[in-house]
Structure formats: structure tokens, C-alpha cells
Length: 209
Image 1 (cartoon, rainbow, N blue to C red):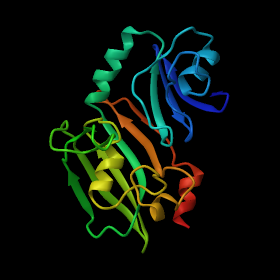
Image 2: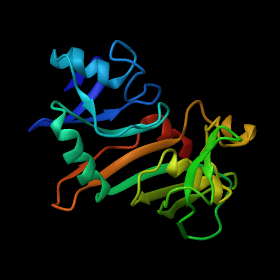
Image 3: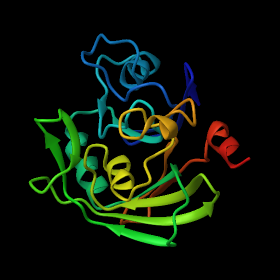
Image 4: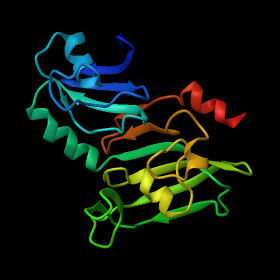
């Protein structure tokens, strides 16, 4: 089912799971902001409120969870905390090792006015596995067991391989390799076995060619 371009892959028991397109934020600055997934879902379901369980960056595509009742936000947010969250990304440069574990803490730096790896930050854990290498780019799978702001982007930058198309954290040469952030929230698996998964969008598949 689609809601004005949104692909809704699950709608039951108050939970809505969307395969979010790149270029649209999960929620807006206000409820009246029309250009966000939250607003489009409110219009589609003809409801005055729908709540986001978590946020995806505007440029990131993939699985995004929403609920129809406010009381469900904390329920699903807690479940999401303990879920396996898998991302697919294309990063600049050719990674040498097959797998990496990144535990660098993340937080907001007032001096640089950006999120970054910082000693005073909150704990963050990412497991990075190489899918395929090219001379100037590597496709990776990233599993995160925490959910810090920009975690995947910052941990990959910390490894020296920022995400292709990332105009915020990547050098210009890598940021300009693709028209958008080459990052996709591909699957979520909850402890009870409930699992959601999406296909890699065509524009990211094209990076393999």
C-alpha cells in the first residue's frame, strides 16, 4: 500500500512500518509541516496525530516505524533498543579488512556544532562487514546495537570511510559521488522474531555498476 509515494509495508496493532524514500524527513518541525513522513501518514490515515518511534535522516532511505497511539511510542522504542538493526551503505575508498567493530562514543560538540566521535559522548556500538570492494568505493553492511544520532555515518567516517553522498561528514570528492546519502535502513529484527526487511533502492544498486 502506498500513501502519496510512501511505501507502507506493515499496518497492524497500532504499528505502521514505512519503507521511507530518501529526501524526506521522518517528522517535521511542527505538526503542520507537510513535507515529512509523519504528515503524509496523518493525511493517509485521516488521523490528527501519528507518532514517530524513531527518526531517519532525511537522506537515508529504508525502514521507519510509526504508531497510531502515543502510549505505543515507549513500547516500540524500548523494543527497538534491543532489536538488530541492519543498514547497507556505500563508502568512499577501498576498505582493507573484512570486518570492523566500532565502539567510539558519540555526542554533540558545541564548538563544531555537529555530532561527532567525542570522549564525553554516549556509548555507541557498530559492527561493519564488507560486502564488495571497488578501487574507489566499498559496499558494507552495518549492524548497530545502539541508536545514536548519525551513528552509522559517524562510525564509518571514524574508520576513514565516510558514506558516499554525505555532504555533511564526507570530503567533497566523496560527498559528490552520488546525488544522495548512500545509506539504507535495510532490516529490523526484534527479539520475539518479528522482522521487517526492504530491498536496496535502485539508485543505490546502480552504484555497483
